[in-house]
Amino acid sequence: MLRRAAAGGALVATVFIYLIASRGGSTDVSTMLLAGVGVNAVGMSGIGLLIFASSDRELRDLNYWMLGSLGGATWTTLIPALILVIPSLIGLLALTQPLNALLLGEGEAQHLGFNIERIKRFAILFTALVTGASVALTGVIGFVGLVVPHLVRMMIGADHRNLLPATVLLGTSLVLVADLVARLIVLPAELPIGIVTSFIGTPVFIWLLLMRQRGGI
Image (cartoon, rainbow, N blue to C red):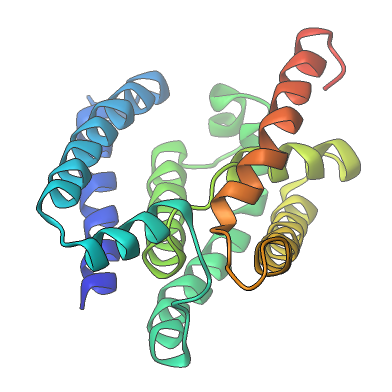
């Protein structure tokens, strides 16, 4: 029930952010990002309130969720998440052609016959469903979503027909490797995955930023 509420909350928050950023039939991406920062601050305040009201056992579970772990993933919790994730991934793959057109710019994509606002709405919806279901199941696993798409783009280019499937495969592989490291590095205890991914992902992310500044990507 709590995981379903978390996934539903992610969708509600995304719709709220989208409505804030939409005006006159168009969506401003910069406004959406700023609205996301504001909604995230409210969400973190809610998490802080839960931390304050939690017992010691609940606090430990909450900390594990905030740092990410696959320990709570069972078939009982995985199947409802897959019901949201798989159709959403298929929907994103169906958007590869219009997403490629958007690389040329919104005006050019519109001249090619694509409905830009419709593409944005579906892309945001599918992304929210995938992210909400995944985070509700595993908790917050940092830097995978920031680093992996850029690495894949550097390796195989920006064609979304290849970029999206490769990002899913590489992201999944890295999470599994991080989970293995988290289970082995401090035996018999288990580190949260988010600690491992953040420890590795932070320097990689900074390197990507430096590469971008120098025009390398």
